[in-house]
Amino acid sequence: MRIESLDAMYAPSSPMMQVETGYSKWLDYTGMDELELRADELMNRSFTHLPALVDILRDQQAVHGLISPALESKLEALAAGEAFTMVTGQQVGVFGGPLFAVYKLLTVLKKAKQAEAKLNKPVLPIFWMATEDHDYAEINHVFVSQPLSRQLRKEALSTVPLAGKASVGELEFDRLKIELVQMLQRLLLSETETRYTTTLYHELVDVIQASHSFAQFFGHMMRRFVGTDFILFDPHQPEVRALERDAFKRLITEHDRLHAALHDSFEDGMPTVELNREAAHLFYHDGTRELLTKQDGFFTTKRGHRFTEAELIQQVDAHPERFSNNVVSRPLMQDHLFPTLAYIAGPGEIAYWLQLRPLFHVLDWKMPLLIPRLGAVLVSANDEKKLTQEGVTLVDYLADPLPDHMFDDETFDQNLYAYRTLTEAIGREAGKHGHRFDAKARHVLERLADEMRAEAKRDQYRLNSRRIHLSTRLLPMDAPQERIWSMVPLLNRHGLDLFERLRRSYEQADFERCLVKL
Image (cartoon, rainbow, N blue to C red; front, side, top):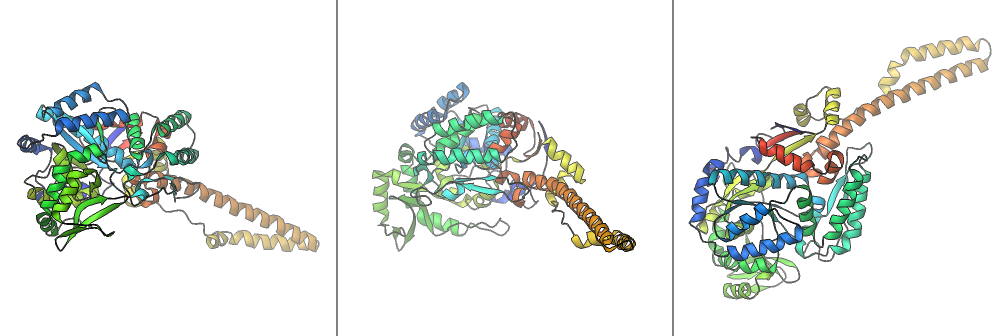
């Protein structure tokens, strides 16, 4: 494996390119150079719940598999208030979700290691699994390649009770295990069989059978194929909600100030992103997940729940498990729970985090460092060969992908003009010896023309096959590779240790946007 710098996967205006330069005026800290300043701020804040939080983290890790002794030692330091964290997060997609979820994890591992060296203190990498999210359609599928087609097929699980209404952490998983095995079979059948296929299949079936929730399935994938020295955090558990009581109550009592801060947070030059500026930024759970909104002094939901501020705080005290965060309040809750040095973000997250800084200030905090995740394009030797055959570089291909060759029957017929003239001449000459000789000569020559047309189309197919390969591997469905492909096809093609090898190479690199030559 060789890793090189590559910026071509993102436009210059992308948040991934702009976050540490063009967006600096909307950040409290502008990169790893200001890590010590963030550490000093955190040391002046109180995190009295850390011992209880660490007990929860230990219990959660036991569900996903063994952690390294070094990570266990860091947990002890965190409980004692002698460690920091770096956080990233993503929805718990089946089979690990899109590749960028893995890239987030690789980035938080690398940046936590760099922060430890810089601060001389333990830094725990945290992956916040978005089990409180309710978007089932976002996590229930993979994409599968199809023969001779640039279009990938979306393989999705069937619906389950409350899908799209309740948090994914509450959905029934066990009833989907047979479907997941079938999805895995179709995914691997769409791939060329390799020496890794059988082992990969059996290991993934074991992962499915050992899992009893989407979070466990996701966590087992990351533990098995990335490593054992990071924390997988599931926020949607009653024990966690109990530690969030004070933060929930603060979100309620500070609602008006937070609402005003968010209302005015967008500035010219920021990337455009839709945020619900009218919500109370809390969900209330009563069988389904309902967003709270404050109207005329009351906190209400669309299904008719109605609370005064005092009544809602009473609910938080008595039943914190009935509450969860939305996209705006989750970063604030993260800062409440963890002494967070930095958040590792993708382009969409960077876009909306820029608008959240005033909300941190309302709570008398500063926003943590905002660091873009690894961006990568994985290229095999076969991909490179096909690019060379097409006479195009990867950078050029990403900017201007090659379309299919279209077969032009009219042009082909024009090119056969001389052949048609010869056919006419031979037919007339043969006809001098009888009509049947004319017909036979024309039939033989027309059949030869059809064979030439078929061979020309086969040549075109071979050219298009190469272009379809490049399209589905490098820009599937005209989207970045990292947003479409899951871990499974790459593990099948390049080995079960692929992402461990990528981690080692990436941690030795001094750049964050990478061409990975496999």
